[in-house]
Length: 297
Image (cartoon, rainbow, N blue to C red; front, side, top):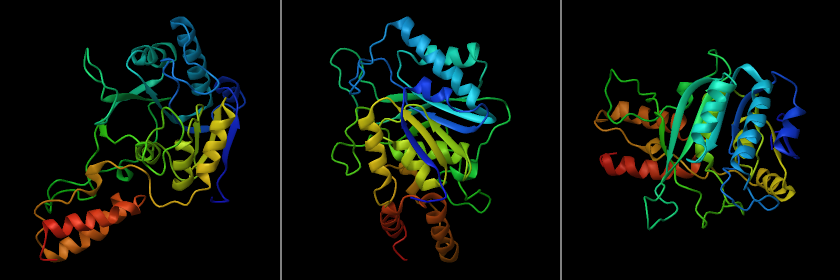
């Protein structure tokens, strides 16, 4: 772990933890709160009444706004049953500034025999004010075609993101019911914070946000009321890093019409630097795809 970074994990209830943080000190909040779907989180059953859940949500979101800097951003994961209510709290009750409603699409999910099987989660992105950090160059995706007039640094990834779940056979899979992919969190942190900034997660869970912050040079503070999850997150921070456990498959897309050998060689080197710098485990696949598309190399 980088000794210059402060990665702090505390076993605390989210609201109690938030109340300990001074106002206007946090650059970014990325969090995946309980969806109130009766999942087993070890010491809590996640089954509040409707009114209790909205009151709980309002309280922790209110504290979140207090601790955010004026240039701060919050990303909140939420399931379909409560997403509109959280939107209303953020937009109408707390007067956050709406930016994006992101859809996380995945190919595997819960199967249903009556009705349609869910294949996405929603992520709300709000900012405290209209003046906020957004590092587009750090999250661009490769272009489909090479053109000299193109910005080959890449395109905006849009608000529909495809990342696979962290499969149970993955070496990085933790004993947690709602573990999120690292590549998904990577995009939010790169876009909405800078190196050395402070990122907060009031619901640490398996520790994904803490791990991503550690590798991207961000300071981090997080809370969870389950000591086992806090220890799980600490253990993840001690593991060697070989690349994040997931990636938007567009990131190793090889542009068509990259026929000039000189331009192609320069682009390939830039592609690895621009799009795969935190995904060393995907470089070989990208180079293999390049050789298939341009066999003369």
